[in-house]
Length: 441
Image (cartoon, rainbow, N blue to C red; front, side, top):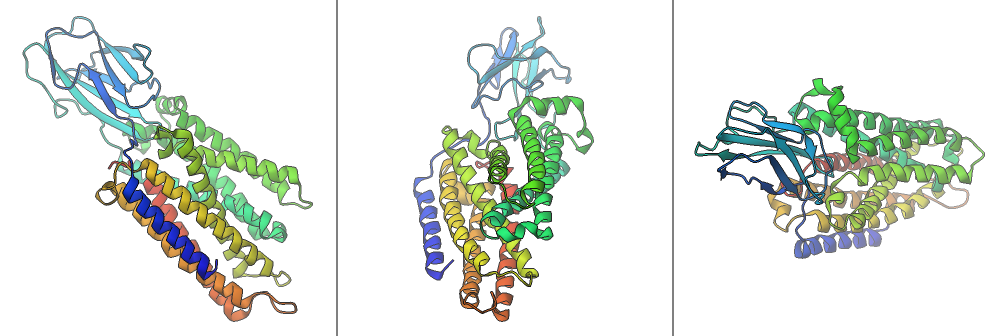
């Protein structure tokens, strides 16, 4: 990336940041209760036959998502959760007939389309008795277990790292075709495939306790595993697992000469499926114009994985350059690829922020806003570091009869690329936390 290109990228980021501040539109990140029957705090003369809630999105019928208890904590609902009418966003649970006068607490626990749990309570009273609140005799799980939350965030970061390592395949195919036979480069790709598969399994196991507010001891709870499988998030995790496994098998043949165009296409399609399993389970799916946001997220994550995966592969080859390999064409090709990726990241990231951020003030008044600003800051810092690496390339690479990279410039290039990899890892860590944070809070 030349100095002029870096300045253009920075100007683009500044423009998108200003666009975000001036035109941010309200959005909803997680499922919310729009209304309920009976309403919160309602006093009734007779007991209702059922309790229903209308949600902000269609989450399907999730077993156990609605429970009604009395002041002693005893369940008074009967039968499974069901849809009482033609409104897909409305769910209900039936109550025991002939309930006596008294206060009743409704506990809800839904998993939104972006995989995050939303829990809470509301109450109603039958007759003239006092109205209880969630501070009554009910000990309901209303938050995610802290240990599960930390482990889930770590697993999420590792899953991002796995996909980034797989993104190095584009580097090998387009920038360093001769690296297919390099055992170090091959190990990175295979590690990425199996890391993606392993984290898909771990995420599937963690989702049940994460959504139910339970601890790690519930990882293998059959009921929670079944609940995870019922929702689209669980099914997409299994799709990711299958795609990662297929990709691991394809890599063994793809990286063995001679090269096969069919295998390359199959690997790219399978990699696209892996990326889609991330984009189709995050904040973009809560956008009213879901397909637009999912497409922007696919472009965003695709560019990040290609850029960061290429950086890892480049750092590897710069650490111990093969004696007979000319690095000139490798670093020159990657320089152009990196510029394209940075531009794509900036544009798609700006579009996603515009669609997801609920308001302008949420940029500096919410945890999500601060994390987003941290991620943008990391990207901004990466740009001059990348520019320093490109300057080392331009001043030390090329020319017939010359070594590909002069020793002094090779040292500068190693330092710059290593710094880029470290900063990219930090940005991925912020993204892992950002994914689990509601934009409105």
